[in-house]
Length: 175
Image 1 (cartoon, rainbow, N blue to C red):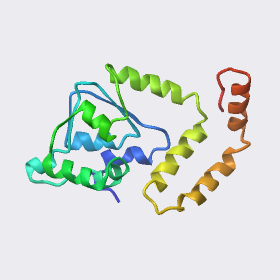
Image 2 (tube, rainbow, N blue to C red; image 1 turned 90 degrees about the horizontal axis):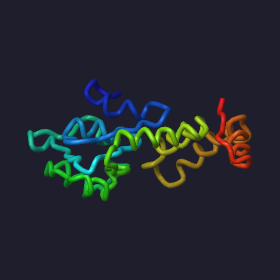
Image 3 (tube, one colour; image 1 turned 120 degrees about the vertical axis):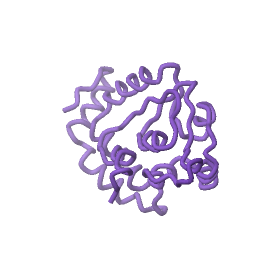
């Protein structure tokens, strides 16, 4: 349903694999909304963040309704959208808009990606789907999805490989 302006900020949630953003400098307006669409956001200490649209007489309209509710309370979201206040990296991190702070966010993001690839692809895909489809759902709504996603994973070749690799203290070789 997304329009051409919303799609860049929302498409990452439709991908099965984790999406990691490295943020430096000014992350304002549309750039902030695109960054919020990533699963993980690594930011440099000099990063500045603002949902800037109200400064220009606009509302944020690039998927903010799909991303911000997972990260902020409603009053915090309204404040940032209504004021266009510029946050420094520490404040963005403390609010939960940034996953991690790093002097070199691109290197940190790549190291995190290297860590993620040591996990079963089905687990990464399933965990992302659980959050995307149930995070803001009514209590109990995600239980069925958990069971549906777990059924083909448990006992699968990659799940057995994860167990064996841990027992044998080696890196897994997923298929």
